[in-house]
Image (cartoon, rainbow, N blue to C red; front, side):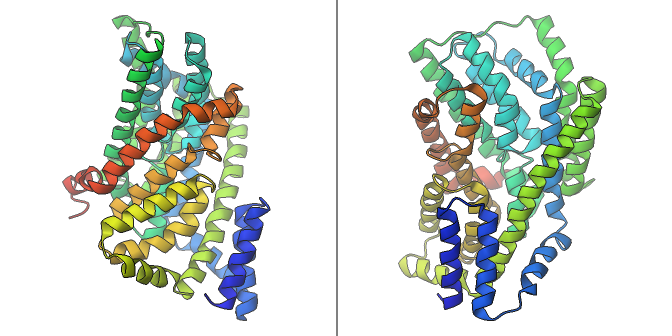
Length: 430
């Protein structure tokens, strides 16, 4: 490494150790790099500005954030939960299965694990605890099922990956469908066995008439993913336009269909959205500077040469990537991994002939495992906070769901058709 890059890395690591904001660390590292290198600091500003002015896809991120906040403010989450409850029936551990099904449905609306855990998760945990489930188990399943959100379309992390890699957002969304369903099935298999072992309660059988009522009430919400995905795949709208339509549609159903959204709710949603967008935008802008420095210093080329010196097998590379991201996910926020480390890996993956759609789903799925992995999994802290359950108890319960998630990760890593089948079937890739 050059002296400038070494200084930048040291400053970034120090800020990380001091637990200061990661975005600040990236900006400070970039400034120190240009100061030591003797470059023009205006490049830092130009790089950030160009990131936003030259990338239409990135506008989809704040739009989906807004949609998620609207969904959580109205009765939408309640309707989804009641509909999923009606689907499961009176099987043992039914509410655990409802938890997963509801997250799968909600995933088709917001693409955010945090929104799922914070909004829908509160309803799920309360219902499970009242029915006799162990509170730590309820939180663990909620955290694990919330990770479906960024995998099943639409997905905020996949939109950011598309921006980083130049990959089709629509193809990435299609590629996430089968992995999302596989994760839901894996979690439901685990719930089935643990529910019988611990004698968790059976669900309440819903009369057909009541289920029909729940379904009719849920139809406006259930139409959201259909409108989004059909609009994208028929070419009627771009993913960014789909994000705008989703936000508008969420407002319409919250106000008119469910009559559960006041002007004060709108103000609160706008405040939350602006705050979330601000944090995300600073991260993306700062990461764009780091990406510029990485490209200038040819870090990706050096990494690729080192890896190919060990093995030219793309399967070994994917194995190595999975191990590294799983370890990083235990200690570092997923946005940091995606915005700093993934751009370095993308050129190496491309050089090894790995399909960018496949690689995007592998790294995104892996990062979602990190959201639920101790000691710093964000979803663990969220579920502990909204339920009052001790964090250490949730960490014990999350271990087997993590095993289920890793098994699915192995499947999608080494059977690429689990990701690529649908994009190929729709003619989006060869």
